[in-house]
Length: 176
Image 1 (tube, rainbow, N blue to C red):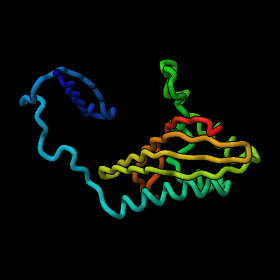
Image 2 (image 1 turned 45 degrees about the vertical axis):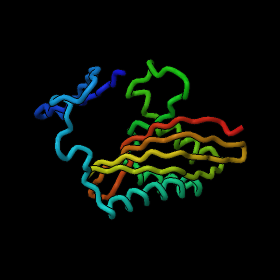
Image 3 (image 1 turned 180 degrees about the vertical axis):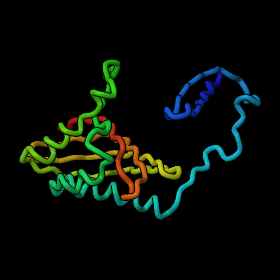
Image 4 (image 1 turned 180 degrees about the horizontal axis):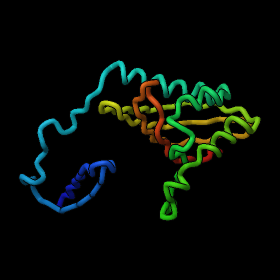
């Protein structure tokens, strides 16, 4: 039986950020090239940061439920973050970073439509490494017209003003 080993290579390009390369190779046993470096998987995380990230997630559902657009906006890094539903069971080949920036549509539907929503998060998982964190969770959103449920993946960054949501991608299914 063959195992698939994935390795991700990060290289810094001076002045231009990070470059990413993904390579896959089938192997039957670990080799020196695929051996785990010491410290791999050991992320810099503190109880205070994890609590602050959990507070952002709690505030998220509070703002959606209360219709608090200003409070919700304060949770985001900015209005231009990737923020979009990813249709389950469909190809995303036509997706680009430009058409993943759909916060304005979410904002208008949730905070400006006149509808009220109640949102809750379940099975929350948070991982952190220094100033970068991710949260994955299941959500349920209910309104007078039914509701939806799905899975969200949020990326958060630590700023001088605290933890901010830098991206949100989610699946969504009708509860009907």
